[in-house]
Structure formats: structure tokens, C-alpha cells
Length: 215
Figure 1 (cartoon, rainbow, N blue to C red):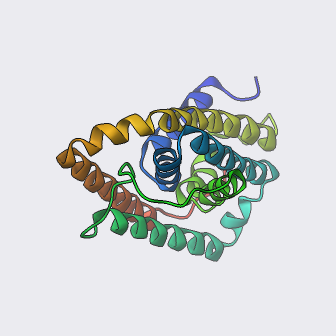
Figure 2 (cartoon, rainbow, N blue to C red; figure 1 turned 60 degrees about the horizontal axis):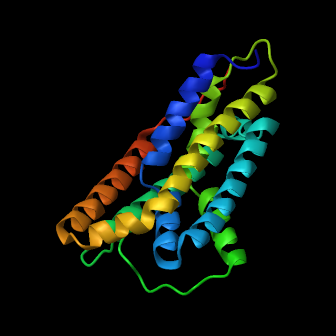
């Protein structure tokens, strides 16, 4: 077998935990689905999927080893991710902050822009970068089956989990938005919860050690 079932189950659980944690992808998909409808959310999700494919290609080609060989590159990526997560946390927690589920007056974007923004949001998502640079290699067995093939299989599993959950988020974002909007206290609690989780992720990313090689 190319990859052990335990590794597949492990990366699936890691992927599920990450996609259920509020982050840039969730915020963008929810905001577009709420303000422009499910179709716009699905087009944005296609862009997110394209971003995943870039990371998958990099992992399969072994490009993530660059971050192991060049510690400064990983440090720059990590600091950028920490800053981005702290910015998102502040947007949620600041006085007058707005929940991702609160209706907003946003300009209607064309499908091409929706796709591009979904792609860039995922490509610059520090959670996904850390997943492919640090977490995915932990499920790879360096002996036997080629590492590239193992990376491909595990990456496909993670992408399948992420896209399934994100599609459900897009479908139900509007209903959840109406539910929360009718309950201001719940909406405020959701905003503080999201801000707190994003802040905790930033701290965790900041103290996370540099990844070691899979071997």
C-alpha cells in the first residue's frame, strides 16, 4: 500500500481540525457567501482549491525542504503568518469590529475576481503553509514508497477533507448569518470566539519550533 491507513486517518484528522478552526479561508468564504450568495461562495471555493493544488505540487516536488534547509526562509514565513493572524484577530476583537457572519455592504465581484481572491487567500494562509511545511512530513515514512507519492496521497486526503467542510460552510453560511443576526448577543460571542481562536493560533505559530526533516 502507498500510505498506511494510520497516516491517512492522521492527516484527515489534522486537516479536519484546521479547517474547522476560524482562519482566512473561512472568513473569506463566509463573507462572500453571506453578501453575494452561495454561487459566489462556490466560485471562491474553487479558487481556494487551486491554492491547495499549488501547495500539493510544492510538497510533491519536495520544495518544502527549502524551509528546512534555509531556516531564515521558514522564520520569515512564520512571522508573516503570525502578523496576519494577529491582524485578523484584531479585526474581530477591536471596538466596533464585525463578525464574519454579519451582513455587509460589499461590492459585487465577478467570478474571475472571486476565484482570484479565493486563490490568493489560501495561498497566503499561514495555517496551510504550516500544514504542508511542518505537519504533513510527520506522516511520511521515508523508507519504501517514494516520498513524493506519499506526499501526493496525503495531500489529496487533506484537500478532500478541507473542500468538503468548506463547501458545507458556504451552503449554510447564509442560514447561520440570519440566525446570528437575530441574536446580537450570540453574534458578539461568535466574534470574540473567532478573535480569541485567531489570537491563540498566532501565539502557537510564534512558539512553534522549526520543522525537522521527515527522515
